[in-house]
Image (cartoon, rainbow, N blue to C red; front, top):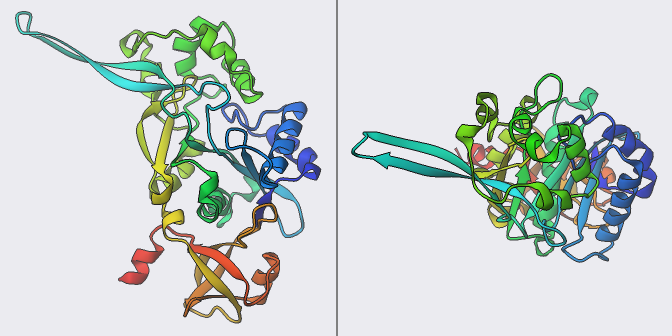
Length: 344
């Protein structure tokens, strides 16, 4: 498997993937026009022709046979062209000594606090390829890309995790809150944000704090909970240093997780090494490897070992990176605990 920047010729396969993502993945909408615009924007971005406010790094995963099976992306800076909304989960305390009453009531504040952060988005892998190391490669490849080009991204990176939906694709949080203000189905609101129509949020959403005690029990229970299909991605991000800091999505209440860019494990621990070809041997472990290019980026996972400032891989791995022995790569162990394991 290879992760690389999206190209215009990928549009038909990308649209096919978008049809299978289901509700909740707003950055990969099932719209040929919107996807074509996004692919064109990504191509400009990888060429270095976009400002940070407009930069959209969309990657695809393809098999060695050239079949496109997944996507992942990075928005360089959210909220710098139009407001970026989240709910900040707060707390209101009501107390009376005379009445012997003490209540802690969670509240939701409409906030733009995450503006300017980079965002991990558009992570989707076709179900028949969710095996082996494929998911981790697709998700972590963009972290290694940020390690190579830190100047292109914000001081912090965040990711909005998909919130809980029922078996019919309905969001309990939306049904208890959003529906009262938007008068539309969750899937329609989800689609509108995905195609870039966020203005209606500011026009229709209440600006005052919301007391969660007025929501249904089902809605309160899903605040800051992730969809079961998203739990592996959440676990992976937590292992890389991301954590929940009290912000949730305004539609499905899925949690936003964040981390300072420099503190992300794959960024912090990655190294620039000289590529050597040979036999990786028994000491080999899976490494995430990037050829250090931007527009021509190729990122893979392969068995490798460190040896005196070099990364030893087999010749086939070098060919998949379009590199030769003696070229430089950026690499990091794929597993977050690999360095600790090697140190014991």
